[in-house]
Amino acid sequence: MKLSAVAVSSNVILTGVLLMLLGDFLFALNDAMGKWLVASFTVGQVLVIRSVGAFIVLGPMIIRQGTRQLFIVEQKRLQVMRVAMTTCDVSLFYAAVSYLPLADVMTFYMAGPIYVAALSHFFLGERIGWRRWLAVFVGFAGVIVALRPSSAMLSLPSLFGLTGSFAFALTLVMNRYLRSTSDTTLVTWQTIAALIAGIVLSIGQWRQATLLDYSGMLLLGVVASCAHLLITRSLKLAPASLLAPLQYTLLLWAIVLGMIFFDNVPDMQILVGAAIIVVAGLFIFHRKNLRDTITPDAVPPDGH
Image (cartoon, one colour):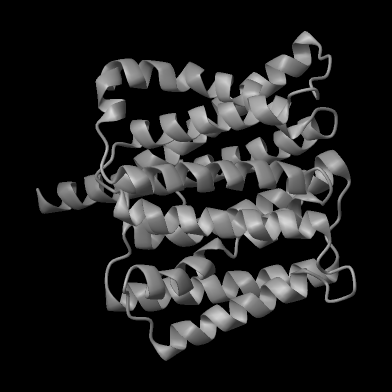
């Protein structure tokens, strides 16, 4: 009987790991699709159609939960801040990948957990030991290496990536305050905000598109929503301490998809910077896991 229970538990955990890996792949695919689309269309136009596509998945979830629940939220001011940060995150991500290789931008975003560790000390009152502080500084060094220190280091596309990744980190921190808000509510409001931002950004910038182009933009929203649901489900099946490091597979997929679809081969500086960031991030997760159990929100709950 005990052996059977252990086997079932192992299968559940394995399912959680596989769902996380699939969710991360879908997020990477979503990012690659976004890069392809913003090469021909404005960020605002992509955001509008993408948001409409997301509601194909969100619609049934909203109906099941009830629309009234969307307005029953905790800490409204913080909810608004989170929505602003997620909108900033996704907009700047697409702006960055329209100029930079996918792997370069993803390298900046992989520093998100490192920013979270630093921000948690100041905003959540979490005690950060000297080892994790050292890892945070090493992670920042990795970002600087990836930026290619030069007079062009702070180019506009690089600033898009850096600012977007910082907004992403702030979103993760705010998720810890808003953990009692349902997933459907959080994603619905951030999707509505992205839709509104897209409408504003696309004023006077809307371009003619084929049915195939619009289908691609709609699919972008469907893929992102499915990825989000897969990762949310995985966190209920397996320990977050096991799943958290798997997010770094996003960087691997970004490199592979960038090479296949955009002929972007990352240079040695990006690879070295990415390696430093990943090692620092994994060490932070490891130290946190030694002190306590990593909460599910330590893993990005949604993608771009």
